[in-house]
Amino acid sequence: MCGFLVYVGRKINESKFNLSLNTLDHRGPDDSRKIHLNNISLGFKRLSIQDLSDASMQPMKDPTGNIVVYNGEVYNFKKLRATLESKGYIFKTSGDVEVIMKSFIEWGFENSIKKFEGMFSIVYFSNNENKIYATKDFFGMKPLFFSKISSDEFLLSSEIKAILKYKSHILSFQNSINPIFFTGLSPKGKTMFEGIFSVNQGDLLQIDLNNYEHSISTIFKLESLIDESIYNDLSKMNLKKLSEIYSSELNQSIIEHSLSDAKLGVLFSAGLDSSIIAGELFNKGVDVDLFKYENNDFSDKKYTKSFLNFTNQNLYEVNESDQDFIYGLPRLIYHYETINKSEGIALSKACKLSRDNGYKALLTGDSADELFGGYSSAQEYFTKSFITNISGFYPLVNLFNKVIPGFKDLFSADLNHYISPFSSEFFDTFLDFSLYNAQKKKQINNYRESYGFLNSKNEIASNAFMLDEIANRLERFLIRADRFGMMESIELRIPFLTIPLVKLAINTPYYKKTRFKPSLGSKTLFSNKIILKKIAESKNIPRSIINRKKIGTLISNVNFENELYCFKHISLKNVSEFLMIGETDIKESILLSNNKWELRRQIWNFLSLEFMIEIFINDTHYTVLEERIMSLVNKKNKI
Image 1 (cartoon, rainbow, N blue to C red):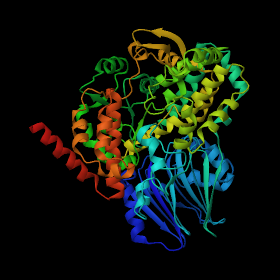
Image 2 (cartoon, rainbow, N blue to C red):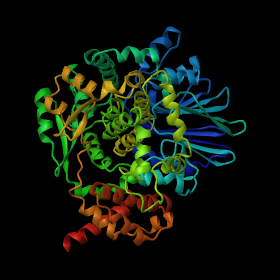
Image 3 (spheres, helix red, strand yellow):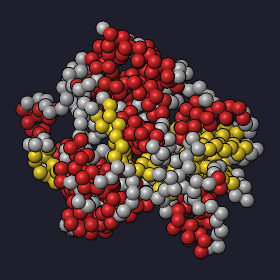
Image 4 (cartoon, rainbow, N blue to C red):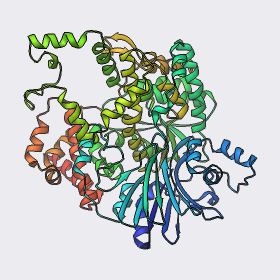
């Protein structure tokens, strides 16, 4: 895990380049190197994990003048190296960078990317073609941003802040609506900053240095992994056989993800996903320590204790209270560069604890919920899809609607105050245009067409929903993991997110992952992640953890008095100007929320937006904002 900056242009300003590159110090605190050519400069900040010697330092240049900078891990590099050696290639290092470089020479850039198994963003200068190639792994685990700052100048970077040092930018209103109010993501390929773009997963960016023209093409689509034959085979399997197939792939992935020349641990939550990872490493005799955030307001020590009784692994734990979260928001926003989930602060503290103990990489259970249907939103969608696809449902609803006008919208949110006459169908097109640049409906339709070989409308809709979860919702969590890890110079690895596992997941019928099983205790209609629970049983994970209700990262809505106080007393002048709504109106509207969870979320989002503008537009250092928060809270405590 590292950070890089690439400048493409006719004349390099070296002092500005150095200033920009230094904003990435946290991504690579171990070493730094730069290469300057006639019209391209490449800078690199290294976090040494594979081959800790200087020989694997980047940017790496071969004898013919090709150069590569790369952030991440290619877990199958040893297999690729063996293949290349059989073809006569000689290696001087034991790391993955040289394998990547020689792969491009042997197979070309695009074909090589399709062979790589891992998480990465890569920029490659082909000297013979005088061209830049840039892409990232097919799930988008590692960031890659670019901006055309003039007619003959480009910047590519691991983070937005490095680009901002070159040219001032403003926030884009349209690209910010979704992060502020909804999914936390800007439209595909865009960021909250005008003129700064993110390379989509599956896309390839090319820059021709002869004329400074650039192009973007798609080299991978998630739906290409759907296979009717595999789907039919998996649909006939019982739970035991399915869990064995998944377990085999997952076990292999966990071991591959544990390959490291630096100290490696597990980001542990005492939940199902991280327990499976830690349990498998214990069963294989891999000695790793666990790092956990423990909430003093909302403890889950009993689950942690039951797991440690099983594995006897070492646990490092940080203990804090929800009310202290607000202190970390400015620094988190500086690293997020967008609006994202608040639990990043809690998880970053566990990462810092691991870093303080000499660790550089942690395995995490991210993406298991998307693959195995772990979210309540998936259950709600399955229920709705099942009901609405019952033959005769809509004709019956329309009949009742004629007798009782508004019947079909009775169970929607009370939006009549905002739109009259109200119909929930109005929002489909409105949200597609305002949040997704009119791309979402087409994408969902494509996903459904990919499952066109199925006869059941409900099955098609539900599988397409799960595919969309992986293709889109997952991105927010990948951004979160990369940023809160790297702010503490920790690489987070995701064993659940590999091509073989995702291919299994999107070819497994949703009803094999989630079963209708009403429970008053957990207040759910479905038992979810049943394949994963079966795998956990085979690894002897404690039953209390397997049956534990999903709660996510341990944060509650109980203790956010400091956030509420800061929201009331910190000026939202910048937010007011950005949204063109009065500051008093903004605060009063949000504080009228009757839902405590939603109130906290919006307080967090609007303070995040205010701090984003202060940090990235007004050039206020985040420590100044931290001091402002501490002063306010101290004042509150003295009252």
